[in-house]
Amino acid sequence: MRNTRNAIKTAETGRTGRITGGHGECAGCTHQQARVLNEALVAKVPLRLLAATYGMSIAALSRHYKNHVSHATPEQRIQLVLDRLLASCNEFEARAVEEEADDEVLGVIDDFRQVLLANKGNSRLWST
Image (tube, rainbow, N blue to C red; front, side, top):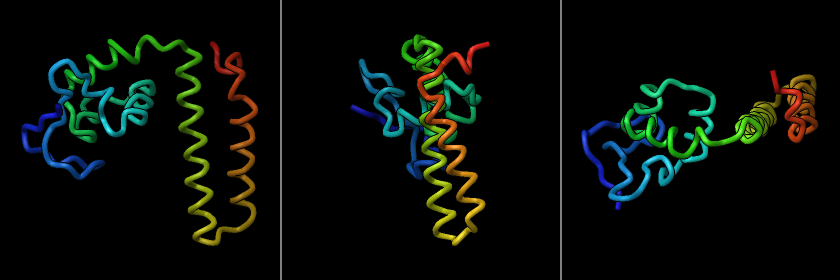
């Protein structure tokens, strides 16, 4: 069961209160935006910013990262980032079509998407 406390209105969710997982539940795993939250943790977004945005405590975010996210392999982390970039391409394309952007803008978005798709299964590209 989820609890709310410390009346904070978060920018992203618009809810008031801090989200906690409840007894025996991880607040990060049970969060409505767990996928986006995990991607942000992988991308090393500061915990303070994530706490304010998603209505969670820094301690809960830290525990979630330590217990669930940090165990992901580098390849899994790369796939998370690539998936997020592909989703952004779709958002940008929808906005560009809505705003009647010229064909050059749509072409750049499509080219970027094709590069991401071509490299989605190729983690060697991202290794250091």
